[in-house]
Image (cartoon, rainbow, N blue to C red; front, side, top):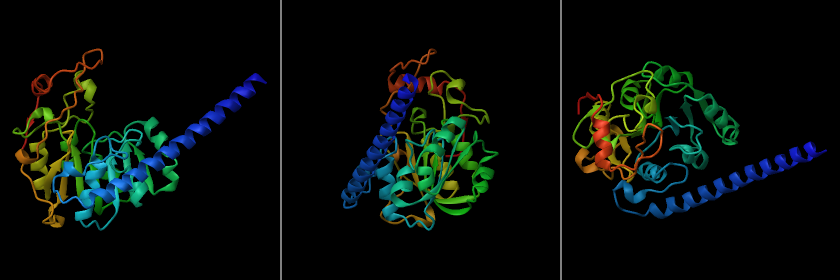
Length: 297
């Protein structure tokens, strides 16, 4: 009897937690819609003036809403990879609030199983695929989900081969691209970590600071792929691009110098995995002391 009562109590608690999470999500989305309407009247072209967070890690939700007020998107479809459990993501608000559909990819079976158990998976047109992304498989993964040609958004955040994977993508032509950059590499150098199909950030260097590409490298790559750089977030870790044929006069293209934001957060770790709280200069000294590849700016 005791085991039965305990099982019933655990079931009630699980149900209550599920209902609570659903209510919190509803409130977050309602607040996001309020912020969206309030910022729609903001005339500033600066992306940071439009930031707000619903499901994104920083202010990307608000920035994307701002960009979508100015950029015509033919297909409300997204591709995002490096999403972990998709609880925190750049595209979730587009999925739940705007009815977009899309593909999310993560290398963890547990993360993908979590996403597929999430009620959003049956309520919305979302496909979750488990794969460790490389520049050799990314086009097949996207095509395997039935996506090609014009889509609305590509979001790249894999803490490693970001530059090489975006460079390799040819099957889709997103209207918008948001990709993580490593501000520790500075505003001048066009550099990326060398390509390694098995790149894992912490395994590569225990500091957790050695990953990705500089902003100048990504802006140069974006230019060659037909994209205009329009700014970064205030956290100093995400860059935003608009496909050049869709770029309106209301969104000025920026130089790297004008759009670069140094990050304020500190995420360096010691060999035991504990945060070290080093200064930005100290973190940059570690990141730039390791092998980097110079690319076309």
